[in-house]
Amino acid sequence: MRRVVSVFVAAVVLSLTPRPASAQVLPDGKPDLQGVWQVLNTASWDIQDHAARLGVPAGQSVVEGNDIPYQPWAAAKKKENLENQLTADPVTKCYLPGVPRITYMPYPFQIFQTAGVTLFLYEYDHAVRTIYTDRPHLSGEIDFWLGMSRGRWEGDTLVVDSIHFNDKTWFDAAGNFHSDALHVIERYTRTGRDHIAYEVTIEDPKVFTRPWKMNMTLYRRQESNARILDYECNALEEEAAGRVSRLK
Image (tube, rainbow, N blue to C red):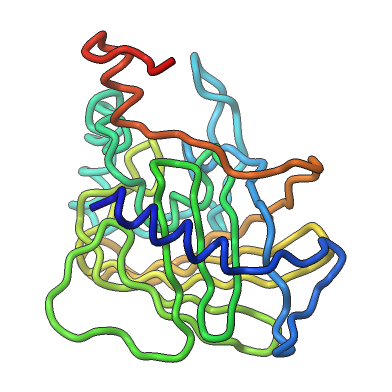
């Protein structure tokens, strides 16, 4: 199924006409968010303040106030997750990172825009998010690793509202987690030619006592040949285990 999606996405991408990096407004008047983007932070390891340790760079919090308002039981669960992070982190099993973690994984992603649709292509595991701005959420009980996203424009900000998550992803490798009641609101605001202000509001009444936010900057990759490449986690894991050999 993933291969079918990849072929479909490739066809969509080829149908899009790239615009110069200097163009900041599309023909429909919406801000041009297109390009290859990446964070320059350590949120994928830990979204809160943390010291360096083996394999983990030190980092500053992207959480407003550096406080995650866990319910008491959930705070204990987070501590348990941290203690078992080397095997319990869903990413170590090559699962999709979920939203918003996939945005601040240490891999770039690319944004394409057409009328009514914004497409996010991630280097990590061929992940794709299609953000429709011209239709509502689907109803019913649905379970997606990346949730179901719908967008709208508030002035120059693209607001992406995502629901229908499963409970199998974490916000980082430090064990910060959520339930299937997760509701994520992302705000993408172009603040310059090569910068997007990225704000995330997290709501989950099963786990947290109140909504909370993260903020960070997305940076446009400056290489003239910048593009997303290929990180297919399951295939690389199989290769590392010696179960398959690298194709020549």
